[in-house]
Length: 127
Image 1: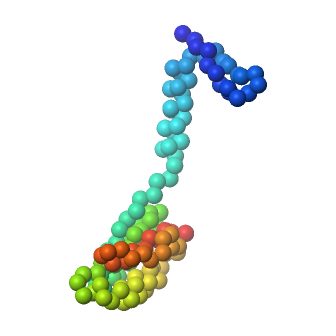
Image 2 (image 1 turned 60 degrees about the vertical axis):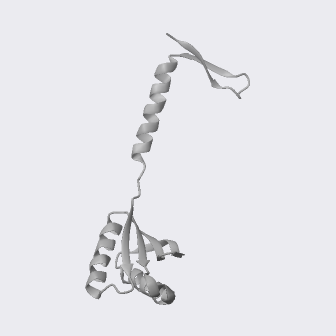
């Protein structure tokens, strides 16, 4: 069964076409699904640090961060402050900056250091 479908209503005179409308809708949705699957999806991975995190653990977390960045993921690095540590936000911010500088994979800061109730976070991506 064929239908009369208005293709371009704003044209003068309006453009109409005789076609199978159900088939037209199916083809259009199929195109949209293909385009959606071709889009690159970014996954945000998380790394949590503390002011008291030891050197070995920092190295391990740095390696994890580099692995995430080479795979093309965004990385959200959080530094968590507990109790009296919240009074020393400057130390936490400095630790976060040093951690980001220690990462050997080329990266760029997508979101600057932000304060949240539990500490600080930053989001970086690979270049």
